[in-house]
Amino acid sequence: MKATRIGGGSEATGTGPGMGAGTGTGTTGRPRRSSRETLQDAATELFLEQGYERTTIDEIARRSGVARGTFFNYFSAKGDLLWAEADPVLDRLPAVLAAVPPELGAAEGVRWALLELAGGMPAAPVALVERDIIGASADAAASGLPRLLAVHTALRRFVTSRASRRDGIPAAFAAAATGAAIAAAAGWLDAGSGRGALRDAVDIAVTPVAAAFAPLLPRA
Amino acid sequence: MKATRIGGGSEATGTGPGMGAGTGTGTTGRPRRSSRETLQDAATELFLEQGYERTTIDEIARRSGVARGTFFNYFSAKGDLLWAEADPVLDRLPAVLAAVPPELGAAEGVRWALLELAGGMPAAPVALVERDIIGASADAAASGLPRLLAVHTALRRFVTSRASRRDGIPAAFAAAATGAAIAAAAGWLDAGSGRGALRDAVDIAVTPVAAAFAPLLPRA
DNA sequence: GGCACTTGTTGTACCGAGTCCAGAAAGGGT
DNA sequence: ACCCTTTCTGGACTCGGTACAACAAGTGCC
Image 1: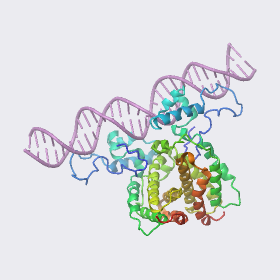
Image 2 (image 1 turned 180 degrees about the horizontal axis):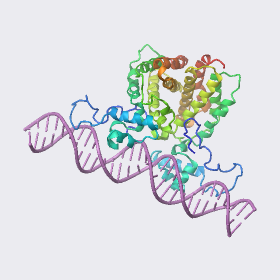
Image 3 (image 1 turned 30 degrees about the vertical axis):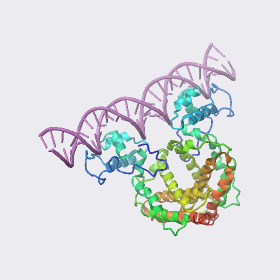
Image 4 (image 1 turned 60 degrees about the vertical axis):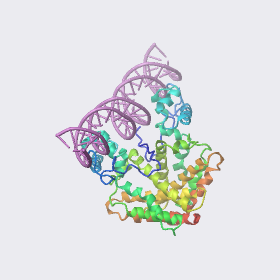
């Protein structure tokens, strides 16, 4: 229950204690009165009404007709509300990296995995559909840091495993690719309704980075 | 006194209210009893003794023989203690970018500015000389986010001003360069005592990124 | 129906970061 | 002496997050 959360990959994405339906024995114990979506909806309402920072967990719980403590059965932090849709996709990154076709080099592999991930992102992810919410609040932005670190860590591990190189290049490439991908995602969110596929935006941003580092990362 | 801190560039680097010595009229009002260094030293001691998270602002203030509230006259947040040496350098970035030789393109200009900045970084920056302190703590890592955003914002502004392009490429390049530079700095810190110049590490990491994006960022 | 067992919910107490503010201390200038 | 400016102090307050013990509400078994 500590889970320093720094390189783990956005734990607590599951459905709180017990994982709801579909876990082993299944249906024993007191049934859940609330649900993730209930809290999510209340929170989104409040965020749109009065902004992220000015909304307290107490209000969210009260509007959901639930005790404050119960909130933390479903979300481990206030900021997790903003990543409800994105987290399941991000959590797939290590698995996707493990599934990278073996004929690809480290750089192409990273690009492949990021595009794969972007393709799986729901069309309207995150409660921050109106991204002004997160953009305007340092607190909200801070909730993105663990995700950023998780992506970076996963990529770095993959790169160092696939390319035999011991200097700073693998980490630099991982960080640069992470940055490019996130910038693409941010721009895609900012583009609003008329935007195209996230995958294309990520492609445009990541491809040059991968191309630049590919010759520097010889096969392991 | 609000200073949302999200795109500003690590404000509150100055010496609290009044800026100490050297501001206009100079020496009027009650003289400062404590100083930034006093608090800094007490904090560093405590961080090394018991770690960053387990050290409270109360303890730092008490060891410095000062009231808790006084701490916030000198640092606007606990995390700022970790960036005392680095912040003044980072704050120079906008000015350095403004001084980029006009014959350089956007990509080369970013590289030039980052190298310039890295060259000015003190040899043992940040209280996190032993970076385990920050690496192990999500809270401590979070204090780096505003700095990261400030760097990214400054670079993005420079790139969009110097290269006429309206799609996601400028932001992607800014983010990739930021990531590469930070990865280099992190690796340099991890290298410990036997490390070379930060400038060289940043050079190695940023150059491929700049080279990749240079052809995509035609002169304005 | 009654019993154990499991799990979710509640309420409360607690901690630490950060804000706010009124009032006291410590100077300088006149 | 008396103003003026600035810092320091101490306390009250908000909010996010943790911990925990008591209670509620189901299931399965006898």
